Length: 118
Ligand SMILES: [Zn+2]
Image (cartoon, rainbow, N blue to C red):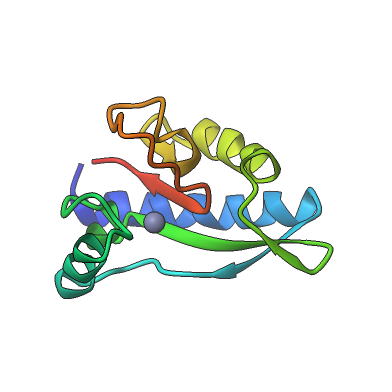
């Protein structure tokens, strides 16, 4: 699959995720989607990220700010329904709340992060 084709599938599925969130009482604002190499390097150097292989660099990841009753939350259990739904949309989709269960076994959990792996 070409990267551009994958990016378009990712973006369409993000639209579905946003609709799903609002249907289930969660409101969203955008955090980061595309990230430059310079920004990613800064995050690695300051401990905000563990990798220079982030799918944000490929336009295949987005971080949302999740709100419940108007309050920002990073609570794993609150965001998990979004992660579960996200994974049903494409076999390559991964949720940052699962980071401790997949191939990145460093215990780093990133609940607001949704990506399509390459
Ligand atoms: Zn992210």
